[in-house]
Image (cartoon, rainbow, N blue to C red; front, side):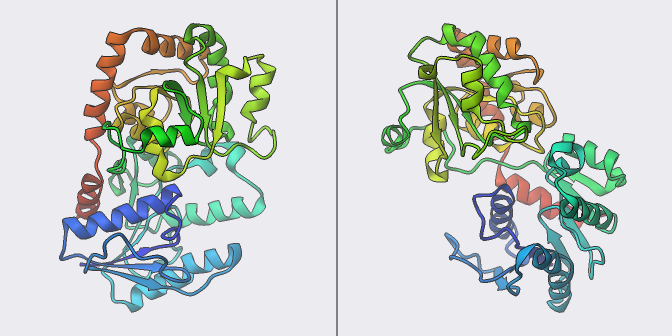
Length: 377
């Protein structure tokens, strides 16, 4: 079988779609050496891979410019090239299927954020693009998604027949493991982190629900003590808006002692495992996730999670954390205090974290995707 994959995000491995595309291609090539894979990449093929599988070809596909160029690549360039290459199947690994596919096309829809959350619908051009890909989804041979929660959303809101939607979970990378690395201490010093802390690592847009997290900290701050600060890691908003509430402004408004909350800024991808491993627990109060890689990465490092019970997070966290209503700051604080002060509970959840994380692997993702390619009906 020859599969041609849309590589729009190939050279953006720091993004979720870029990480998914690269990991999927590398592991598909490994689990099925007879599978031919061509990745069509806008611009150049980019830097070389850590290892080049013999059954993978990286093919430049023009140099599209701006939003219109992206749509042209997705709707015209990619499907035409896929047909010209004589592929058996095309795969678009993010929500951008062609309206008129030239051959059977699989599309991965990670989530329906721009459709379900009003704050993310954007201006007229974004809404027009969402309408285009929503309409085009009906012509896909098969829809893949990351969780059963997202599958339910797709069946309900896009009205895709259930038999044409499959949930295939993602995975944390191999660097996320509980064993300390030789540079862990140096990495934590780099970000000014203490010996132990409570960690949030992610974005600060409104669905991430960091406001409720800080409200929970007002109940937990005194119980944590001075030696157990809250670390809010990630790129801070440039401006305080309803869409991007600035956690520094929220901390001040809630009169939280600034010495108990730290903002180390963005964490380099290579440094994330060490930052996770230094945390006593990981906080993730998000209101909506198509999957939720950060809590899985924390679990893979042996760090229990306190988070919300919304959307896909119960599937990811399982019994390796304490999940509460995303609006219940008091219960969130209670879970945090229990994890920090009950050593037996923490050890139980730490062991469960490693068991839960082991259920997910990129090899599993690749094998289930290959099965979906082969048995689309």
